[in-house]
Length: 229
Ligand code: ADE
Image 1 (cartoon, rainbow, N blue to C red):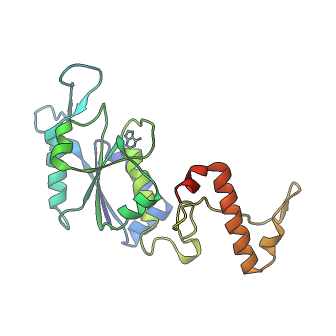
Image 2 (image 1 turned 90 degrees about the vertical axis):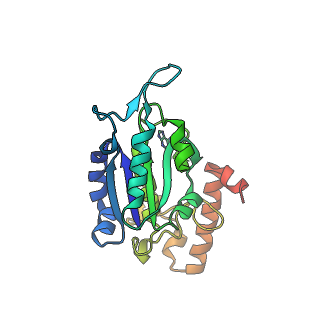
């Protein structure tokens, strides 16, 4: 699976891409990430990618020409096409079902904004899927793009080993519940004991306890998830 990140700050990504799970997936060839600097497609002599908004107001707006040229040029290279995602607080909020849908693509282009937003004609011409990672405003789409890469790559076949499979993650499976409580050694710490059933070796009882724990946690913390089922 391939990601193309279109950004004014490609250098932000490098440390993250070298990190453990993703770094390994890139090294083994399961995942490819290409970074593209939108400024390379600037059309004027000052290399400008943003300008003041028509009608006045604070901040700067990303210009239509460099962004459209950048997307069209990147789309045309490699295996042509790819699913275009625009990161914006105005987009549809990301959740695990949306991550699962994104993971069905062989190639995703992630368009990161900065400043006060995108010239509206970028949306009209490119018709991207617009995604927000939450109802808050980031300084730009870069952190949101990293969140998408991280969540999607975990689902790509071969990235997680069987022993840390994503099957039982929170929000996964048809019921979209929170994951049950987990424990590891020691069995007792500051008088807090691991629930006896988890030490029993009885797989049926353990499965039942986890199911119950997952339902209770979801009800206490995220009752809205239960309402959706
Ligand atoms: N850019 C700025 N804020 C954002 C958000 N919440 N999600 C995605 N992209 C963004």
